[in-house]
Amino acid sequence: MSAEFSTSLPSQSTDSSSSVQTTDLRQTIEEAAILFGSGQTAAARELLSAAIARPASKSDEKLAWRMLLELHEFEGDQAAFERLALAYAERFETSPPPWQCAETMSANTSADKLPVLSFRGKLSTSSEPMLDHLYQMGCRHRRFRLEFFNVTEVDLAGCGALLRTLTSWEAQDCEITLRNADALIDKIRALIQPGRRDDDDTGWRLLMALLWLMQATTDYESTCIDYSITYEVSPPSPKSSSAPLHDAKSGRSDQAFIMPAAIEMPIDVLLAEIDADAKFHEHMVLDCAGLRRVDFNAAAPLLAGLNRLASIKPVELRHTSFLVAVLLQLVGGNGKLKIIHRKT
Image (cartoon, rainbow, N blue to C red):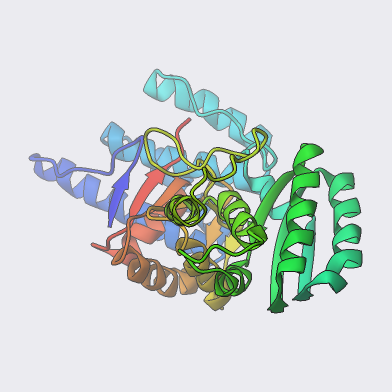
């Protein structure tokens, strides 16, 4: 398992006493991560506080300081954080990491709190009253998550009704996050066929709109090509208010899968959601900015599931706290995941 830390992990020293001290500090850091993951926050705090009181190689010691600063931050103890941050600045002669309250830890963490609008059952002409109700709710919230559960049937009239609703939301500058639309996508694909020019292209246009919202770059582009070949016209352009599908660096939207604040057993549902989201991305990015703690018992099955996915495509855990990253590295060993610490 690779990791990119703004403070590097300890390296071996050629001096015997220094090497022993480094090993002791490394063990202390790992034990503190385990204690925190096991819910023993006070014990982890005491261990790290004692560790930073003993001089050590600065790279190793800085990691312990950063973990203790994070612990104060996660506990919401700003006074203790600021006292330690001042001592950190004096000890390392550099600016300390800033206090980040839960609301500012990530611009994306609020996605977990977005209102959810759910569509269920048949997508047909009879769906218009439900879609109208969802439209009114969406306009009130402006930012919301649209989820699809147990979509049993889809016809072209229903596709047209949903497409009109999406277009109306876009006209109102609503920001839509789409989740759990796999079954709906499959049923829409069953209505169309590349090379077959149907009189009504509503199914195609809805499919492209949904893939755009889902940030499914590869599927969106291939569907646009199939549409152009079938109808011998350019595909409809996405609305300017929609987020771009990819950026120049990664080929993927900056929007990533938002990890929860805490990961505890059982984790089957979380892994299933990650796997479902990964179907639409060649490079899976997990935003861990809001992830405060991984339960020690959940760490191994979490890493097993993520490593299975990483055997198929690249998987990155971005904006990961030191407390979480150290635990995952300790449990995961030489896995295939790339863990990147949040930069401050």
